[in-house]
Length: 133
Image (cartoon, rainbow, N blue to C red; front, side, top):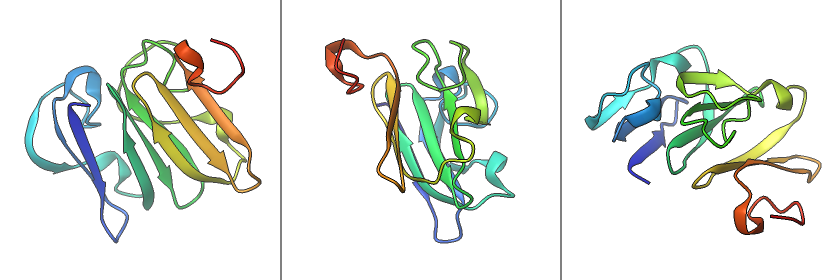
């Protein structure tokens, strides 16, 4: 919502904008007026990123999903409501062949190669697709 993410052809991630809650992934909450490389992915090849309301999500070439920023609605997928200033791998998705990720306002989504749909975070209005609110 108030930050942006981009990937490069070599799999690097860049972020900029408002840094509140660590959503930029630089280990702090500093705003960035210019794109800055997310060094936490130096040894990874990132194939997709998505900027949510106050959090971010990334998919690496090895099918791992990473999230960081505001965890207040469990939208980071780490089983708690902690903010993360740096990208953290979502262990609940380990072993899944994730092919797409998306970060919403206070929720996140992952799609696997077999067509399974994973969603977590704030489900108000049915946005998680679980058949409830």
